[in-house]
Image (cartoon, rainbow, N blue to C red; front, side, top):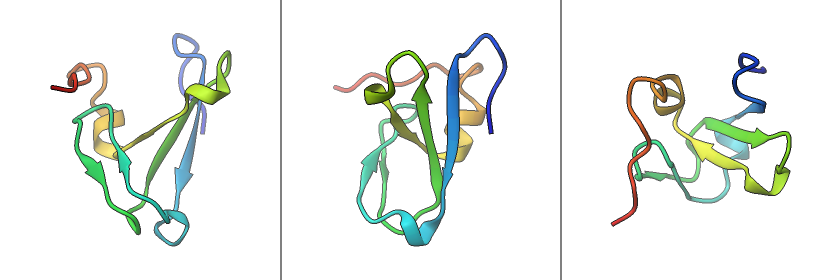
Length: 70
């Protein structure tokens, strides 16, 4: 799945069985527990800057900016 041209990213779904680690969602700054389906968002210009997002947080990213840590 690829989003619009304003965002040059690739969005990949992660199935629950493939989610073997905990991740921190940049949209809500909360944990995505292992075993939870979610999305990996990979900037095309910097693949090492990939981030794991809750599906709802990714869908709401234009209405609600990411929360800062701390």
